[in-house]
Image 1: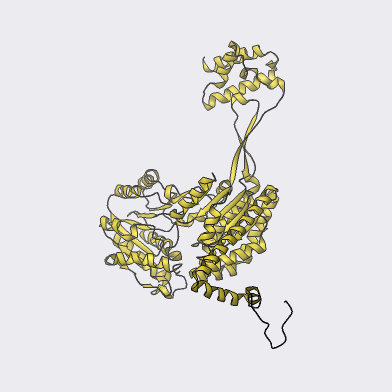
Image 2: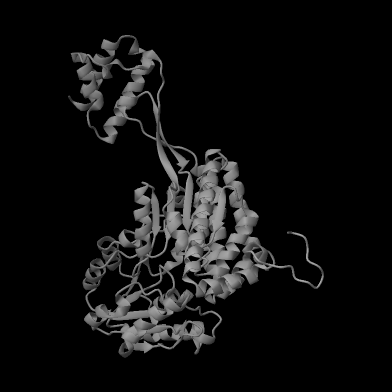
Length: 564
């Protein structure tokens, strides 16, 4: 009975439908929460419903995105540019909202949010708008003698429906930068934001993208591990992931089941090496900033330092002063020093300090209530074994701790770096050309930076990505476009009979064998160019009217040129 009850008199409520109809959403959720906590059977049923609901929603979004791509909506360059311009406008209009959200999630100040993420994203979006018309043009390549006359090219076509996993430590840059590449390449996209880690930033991106972008071709959702698992099992055309190597392997394994191409941006232990020839104050200042910005929660942060023993004390004095200059005597009260993202990461990093308390040079204070860990240097002097065995060196630190060890022979540093997994970035501070070349050519890393830190990420023309455990694939600028594009080989030839060379068809009589031997012989680039010129000359002379004469004439020309 749906008739309203008499004033002042509650209608008789017996069924679950009648009861829930009278509850506000928040009241219903509270009542359900209590029931789930008290009754295992209800909890089991609720979990089943959540999973079924999540899977159903993901399937609907996936099918909608695939249908939109197949309709051709995303392919015109004008459409891609329009979405990129809307994205650029979103970043500019949403600066305040995005800055406030990241302050809540990571205690990051507005200037750092602009400098480290938003400004770089605006630059990346503008770069794509300016150059996407060039990027989509086919690349003309050479054609071998067998396929002349003809033209060869590489056409860049979108993969289709792309999945992008955002990451919490730089929630805007690590989500929107690959999104720019996916849009520029002409894909439909699902972007998954880490609402379980940075809820305010994620919700801001979800809301803004819904307001500014075409939600039929670009969908942005949140969620945690369950959503990640559901998405990773679907048959995407390309997957882009940023995060830990542990989870990256799982994403890679699931993608392999569908033979889906992937780009994995992970991390690793990025070393810095300090030589006496470097400007020690500048080296310390740049490393201090790179280490403690975002409380060390940066995949390209300086993870640890090798410093020459002759300048170790001077370097340590400089870096301690740099921390004071940037964050004051009490970094906890500084508006510019961030916090650990959650309690789990706080405890993980704190345990590294507890493991090496005797090696603390400065710092070491922690506050679990505010998830604060003080900028800390662990100095191992020349005790390389203690350095290697420390908990801080057992995994990527991803926090505000900097282990430092001395060296005398830099070749031992090269051996130490090569003994571990290949880092995402490596930072060498020296003014000696020999030392630069040694590290450039005798080590492997995603990037090798001389006398600077990770500011190279702002250069749209440079690729960003790891090698081995630090990553698979590259992006930024044109490299993002190629990451989300399939390079299709195209050969075009005329179908006229007069230009259809008879030598490739049997029977292979002697004159055909001679002609094939001449055309298909392996030659240098210079020789091939000469032969192409000779063939053009033959075509201009109209000798093609007599095939046997052509073969003899070409054989004679090549014999004269190459001495056969």
